[in-house]
Length: 556
Image 1 (cartoon, rainbow, N blue to C red):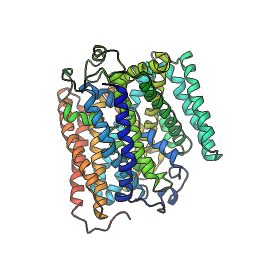
Image 2 (cartoon, rainbow, N blue to C red):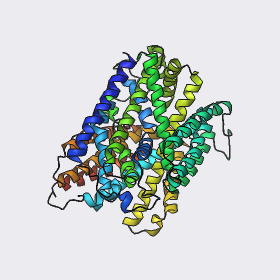
Image 3 (cartoon, helix red, strand yellow):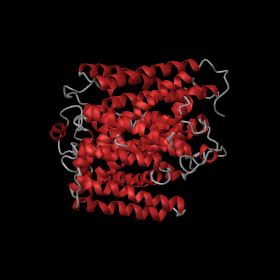
Image 4 (cartoon, helix red, strand yellow):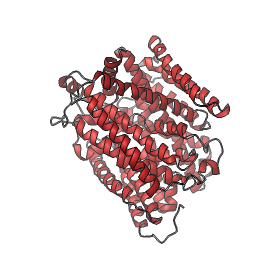
């Protein structure tokens, strides 16, 4: 199978989805109104509520959701063959992720910028809100812990990426001042900033940075974990325009450059996919393809975390309601393109089937390392760059995405704690510094609790990420469906994806509970069980809300 043909087919399908299906949703289902006063204007405080040009906001939203997951998930899932992963990424992006992400932004904008968890109380009921916010907090807990461990491992494995990664943070601070304080147009700061970002990559290769083997008893990965959470704590407390928005924007630009490089070299080098379309000889530890495919690839097809970003930060920055289509649906389309690139890199970036099979010896042996290895081969063959330089480029790209997602997730987790303080009238929880301390403290406890003091086995958290993510996505779709029903609009475009995703997520979660019990991972077993039980009860509450059509609509 030609990788060029697969890339052409996939990108064409994603383009058609945005061109036609997102327009249908915008005009017939969500019915966007350019004159509607968005929360960014109604509650403007220039900290969290900031009217933002749609291109910058798209960059923030895209890189916040396009972390490691759309790379790692597909890079693991191709162990079942490239065809199931390709079908789920393309169909999932068009008919599942786009509807979900777009809808989450829209429903939050129409509810004064409330997060999807908080507005569940108004739409479904207080009890559902409480349970849903538990699910959200636990998901964010897992996301932050998983991404921190993954970033730490990547920085340790590729020391040449350290300088470029942290240079991007310094660069973002400068861009924030240029964009929002000095009101400089985007073009030249973008060109110069991107040039600087790529110019420091050779410096990273010349001066790789490695942390001490032991510092106060902590390994380098553990040291990076602590540094990352200190940084994320500070970033989550800064006004969003100071660091998070410009960092996300410049990361989105370099993502486009990176994706352009990957796809460009695919078309130039014309590699052949060496992995089987359907792998009938999977490793003995691999779980069944159905339904585990649909939770192994979450981001890149549909992801509940996107709903948290869309309703947590994106909706508070939307300048006009009509921008929701561009930011929400196109954001999911971009992530689908990233997931497609991961599929191709991990199936066509090897010289032979035997070389590919030597990498995929067990279920979790793919992931980020396989993407960097395969992608670097394609990029170096098609561009003339050395394999090491191409690997550094892809590592920097992946780590910057993961870092932006982590920045956003810590801020969202702080929002959840503060919303608890407002809902249950606990003043100390409303304090942003205390809320950040609670959020980060819980994440550190889970990261070290699951992986140990040296973070050995820290990625054991990954399996429950997928099931939790899809359960959250199904609940978000259900809440959006309730709103549409009460408004007298067609809800089947959200209900059909909701039924499918909730079914595969619940079955996968039960399978995962069994695996965690069998392997005596009792802490993760309790977390996963709490998530499943809470999610089921939220769904039951939301279904009962369909019988209350006579109740006045929550949105206009």
